[in-house]
Image (cartoon, rainbow, N blue to C red; front, side, top):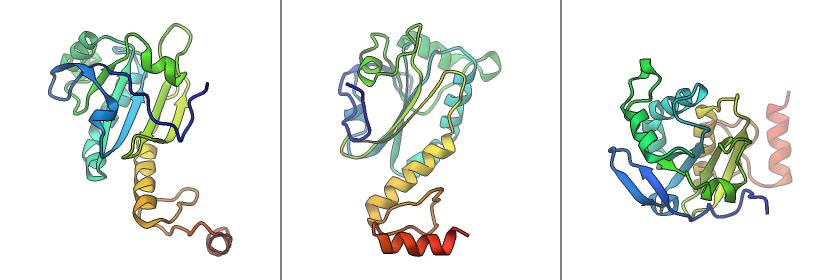
Amino acid sequence: MTFMVGQKFPTATTPAVMENGDINNDFSVAEFGKGSYTVVFFYPLDFTFVCPTELVAFNKAMSRFEELGCKVVAASVDSVFSHAAWRRTPLNDGGIEAVNYPMLSDIERKLSNELGILADGGVTFRASYLIDKEGTVRHMVINDLPLGRSVEEMLRMVEALDFHETHGEVCPANWKKGEEAMSATKESTQAYLEKHAS
């Protein structure tokens, strides 16, 4: 069965390197994110090319995710030992240094098989998931291996989900925090389009 938005994120536990550098052999995304929004992003491999740019970009945005009450988890099929070594490697040597979020090791491919995101060769596609406070995936996007993802777009989606859950309104195309939203009615959509479509 194909994994879809609206389903609960898988509950399998895996090893992870925590943000303080400790290894947790029974890391659970569900437990870590309980009561919070959670972003989980899979990437192909440590010590590669596009991947460090993404992990560093997420790390630079951590204060913004935290302001939204959102936790972040990185994931790949590498071992926790590879993750730990990458965290110790300076940026100018291809490392990521000590990032402020857990790095999950899906070395047995439990999560990536359940999510259906394994690419040829046994690495994962660049798959990103936004999970709500109840553990349900509300947004997901999967990029092919050469295509780095947008951290800004993920932040926008967290803001949109938070706005919807707080105010009950829906967010139109290209909505950004502070902009006008709509009620989920035909009349509200018509009024919005009359005002913004031209």
